Length: 334
Image 1 (cartoon, one colour):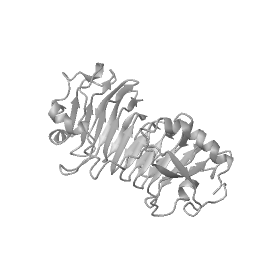
Image 2 (cartoon, rainbow, N blue to C red; image 1 turned 180 degrees about the vertical axis):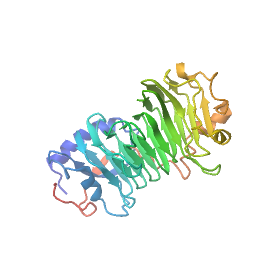
Image 3 (cartoon, rainbow, N blue to C red; image 1 turned 60 degrees about the vertical axis):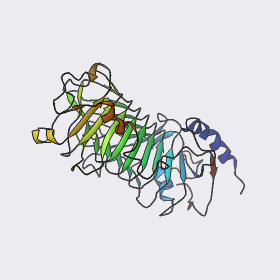
Image 4 (cartoon, helix red, strand yellow; image 1 turned 120 degrees about the horizontal axis):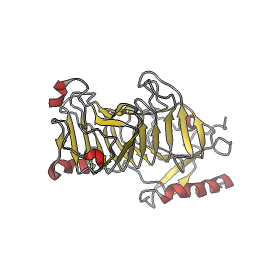
């Protein structure tokens, strides 16, 4: 198969992706699909590229989104696993929509498929403050987000269900802006509260002691406009841990809130381990939160919670690309 000059240009563009590819395996190969608003790719729209992936796909499909502002409401269907969607720089590749309402209806970007990855993207709901306006919904298992920006106000990131990994991401909002019942690790992420009054960063929804879900934040950074609590319990057994995290003075001294239901104080699991900064002082924390010992924190510093069955689902950036028209149902750019 002869590859045209467009493919050569794409390889050059991909260099910035691979440079930060988290130790890409030299044997890693993916099928390349390009999205370019100017018409120089396979598709002009991201959703069209996703729709081209066959149902029950088993190949690694790498959709390269060239720089631009893509005004789209996107869904990755449950029957289209093994997709990676990548820009080359998050501030240059922006997916945006304007919607509010129910949390499962308003997202700009919804991931329903398993084994999904996103790299170097901005995902934004620009509705503004005052209503539920989800930027990203993650409802598939084994999903990972690398160096992405996730932006809204209320309910920014619906980490709904499944095992998820976020690395070097920036997430901002004002009310419950990371919420849901996923089993998720946030590593080296920046959380920024936009709340003008008192905001809440997390609202985790674990509902029974048996559920293996919860949010863990490791080596993260918390900043904000005014003040916020680290979390409040959407579910009775809400579980959130912050470890080795910088907390600016935006974090209120009490740290956590029971959402007006004192019975949840007995069942919620809210812990902190070796955090630092003006907002990390624990002397005035609510008495029902936990200062974790090294032994108690150890399970949360590993990826055990989300890695049952192995860690191979967190894919490195591919180093080889191919095009197979029989696998990708190609359609003329629209």
